[in-house]
Amino acid sequence: MAVLTGIPKRLVATGIDEQILQSLIQDANEQRIPFVKLAAESGKVPSAQIAFAASEEFGLPLLDLSAFDTEAIPEELNNIELIEKHRLVPLMARGSRLYVAQADPTQIQPLDDFKFSTGLNVEPVIVEHNKLEALVEKLINAQDSGMDDLGSELDDVDLEDPDAADKEAETATNANSGDDAPIVRFVNKMLLDAIKMGSSDIHFEPYEKRYRVRYRTDGVLHEVANPPASLTGKIAARLKVMSQMDISERRIPQDGRIKMRISKSKAIDFRVNTLPTLFGEKIVLRILDPSSAQLGIDMLGYEPAQKDLYMHALSKPQGMILVTGPTGSGKTVSLYTGLNILNEEGTNISTAEDPAEINLEGINQVNVNAKVGLDFAAALRSFLRQDPDVIMVGEIRDLETASIAIKAAQTGHLVLSTLHTNSAPETITRLANMGVPAFNIATSVSLIIAQRLARRLCKSCKQPADIPEEALLDLGFTKDMLETAEIYQPVGCDQCKGGYKGRVGIYEVVKITDALSRIIMQGGNSIEIADVARNEGFNDLRTSALMKVAQGVTSIEEANRVTTD
Image 1 (spheres, rainbow, N blue to C red):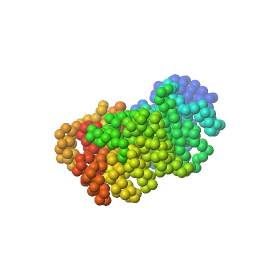
Image 2: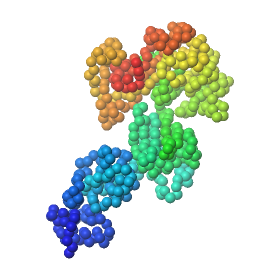
Image 3: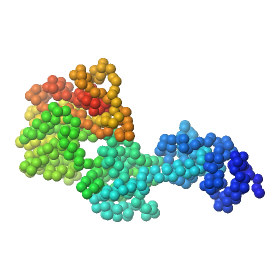
Image 4: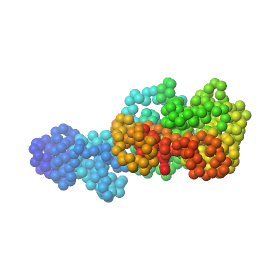
């Protein structure tokens, strides 16, 4: 009988029968597997005792994985290929040191592989074999972010012509890559989860050593998944097949569209764009939910007086309504809401969009295409020969488009459009800077809506904020506001994201009155126009945001984020 040394000798000292250890050593040699692995999996020696003996023998720190927050392991350390190959897990990095969970300290080569992969000095930490195996399996399963465990929630999810898409996907991917069904399920899950969360965009982003998926929810990006970087090409190919793009073209940006059928009665469209980057194609999907265009004006967050101004402008047979704000501020929803109000059997409505985001039954929608000469101006000229009542132009970008739109507004048509400006007064000066005569602006534009989107406080967890009145007055609140103010702050719970759930519109709605027409005709700048608008009783964006704070709808932090003094 051989003399026991090393870890087996330490185990004898803890009370393990020597005969059992001799038998395990013999089996390990015959099967050519490490002693620690065989001893732990045999069930004849407790894993805790093996870990303690290994720690003592090699003078290494001992860690109980059940007391370690494995959710806090940085995503960038999760090299799934190495974790699966060596059954070790990097736990944390501190400076130039990488701490790796290991059950068997006699295995040296795996540590060298982690050192080579990360460029850090590896420090092993001894853990129990069984707990380490459980953690390894957890990380491997998590890499797919639910690829293999979607359950029945995807049963009713389908694509337009799904058989054709799957057939293309099958031929587009590497024949040696194995079964690609998990990629299909992963992409479908990402799309479905984004819809459930009410997200507006999905970002698929490849980097050198990692891949991440982010959702823009309530205007803020959140990381939701980290599939292996090795799947970059497959994920891009799947999304491009779904979007009917050229999967062989990876050098230039492409645009496409996906229709996902959630049920027999509901489908969601995704506008898709690819962008070649250093490490693959970044793909962004804009979620186009037709139900967002059916919200109704009461759901958008207009104050009663602002709603009345918008409804009155929509009821006029002619004139121009301009909606302005940065990208992602909800301009499209405001325009579509107005179009739905006007969409009646006796009204002919035509829209020129780049592109048409949501299909509206009963409205003639045109996608502009500059490559073939169909720009906004060309579409507008054609509309005027189509006996229109209402015209919507996706965006006024140049003098030609602005001139035709104003001419339409002056000749008995109601025109709706957007500009990218920060406020209602700046919209007027922007038109003037384009070259539109002041007289045409003053006589054609009937209403300007500048808007932003602020996050709503979660009703389940928001708490009253204790802020001195002097501080509130300094922020811009008026004494009238503070008389009935209910100011809350975000907290955060399992029903929301950081204390916020959903968004609400913040609006500056300015009707072009006689006083405003005069200052426009006089060539007034945006500051002078803003002063007149304020005197006419129209709230600017800052005041509207503070009113939402006083009503307990949003927080002071959100008001500060979306508006400036």
